[in-house]
Length: 227
Image (cartoon, rainbow, N blue to C red; front, top):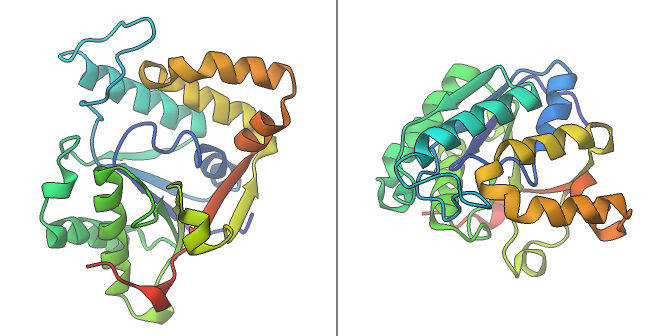
């Protein structure tokens, strides 16, 4: 994995980083690269309340905040920003205001790499609003000074439309940290971790590949259609 000057991670919900990005983040941290994680909401409208349930609608925001802090600690992130937006409302935020928020982070941190979602291919409205804000902010910069964008896509047609991933990071060396990051978000991940653990114990090749390979696409500026 290429050594970066600094990395800015921008996702809307606690646990968005856990499944497809946490190994990459942990690797950057191990490479002594400064990493900032800007999490836009606390995921307080998340569907899951634990399995078996241990949270309520009233307690979930604080629980998810603590889970996010624990996940950041597991990954080694020193600079965790909780941006204070409300879950499931980002699509209703002013597009320009969201992009300005990202611009302010870029101006402060001067990242060489930004990790976020790919607009049009990240399914959830909050994901899409975040992805669009990132692209809008980076688009404002002169081409020569734009940070790289490594973006997560997982909609059904993403590979059909975007082609194969541009970057596949093998994070085998930090696999245990990735699993612990997923476990940190236990209110949301308990339903799947038991099954995943069993498959990993059996050396299931699909489970091993899913855990150890993290896939990203570079943004296709030539096809830029973000409004």
